[in-house]
Length: 437
Image (tube, rainbow, N blue to C red):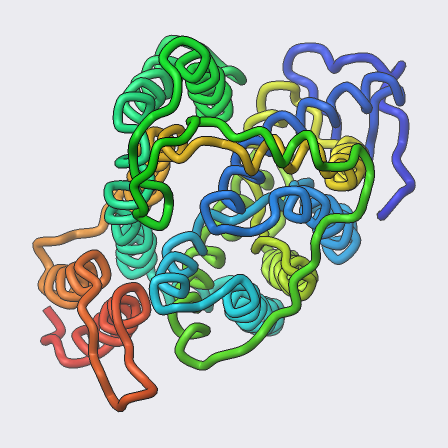
């Protein structure tokens, strides 16, 4: 099934206890409305993460739409999901840029990871989903996700927060309050609401108190407005986003590659969640889903876009509306492609003040790290067992502390990549050496 949706009942909202299946749809006006909700749900993270990674937000939005369509075609419409920008790559990208890499190096490293992810998907499809837990058990996956998130702490503390500490503090507080005070859909887009709040607050402060004297993203101190809208006035209303050709480096690729582990776990979790909600066994298409995510990342990064992954935000929309129709996702994808062709929108996004990103990233990076702890908790990982405790402890400290291992003048391993290797290889070696008890 790709485009042959059956009309659900009379095309109206399903009654309590009922749901619209992936191969069904509501009336087209309602389907478009649900699709618009999916756009709003994915929107915040899909353009915030490219902004943080220094990539074109317009291109990221457009390619997320294209990647979503490709994903739905590969899984034959059986897994309703939207492919937005992945947070798992943020740490690796920060390491690439810290090592002197430019945007070409960044998207080249991401593209390599996309190829690896696609190959892993093919292996899973042939060997079955059980291979995921054998090679990457929850103990290891949780450790890798945790060190990826917490490795980013210096980026938030040293790059974004100092640009405007008071706006950063206000934005952070707003995100925390909104995520707790609001309910349902609105709480799920607290990051987007926080960005809008911080942006408006910065404009107000510029009007009331004038320029701020503070460092920019490169650490250069000067007097400047918090929000510079010169690029917005110069941008066209319609046009194609700026493309970036990938360039390849073994060192940079190794820095980004650990994100693949997070994406495998993420995809497996999302496919399982969708299967439970739709009351269908989706294990047979898990390999296809991972492969499709890899293909989406390869497509996006090959032209300079951001890495992709299935979005929990959109799974939340499905849970709230009980509409699992893939038709709504095609609508969302088309809207995203159109948005990507509006350069003025991208210029507004790129003008986001550093202080606002500071407030958002301290929450966002911490949330990424704590997802690792969530994986441990949900799978009841036993840290009284030295197999889990010792190698994972070493890997986490190496990753979070950016410990470096120099092999030669041109090759080294450090931070996320070295921490991941220690966690994964160390766990399997510990398991092989440990007594049976």
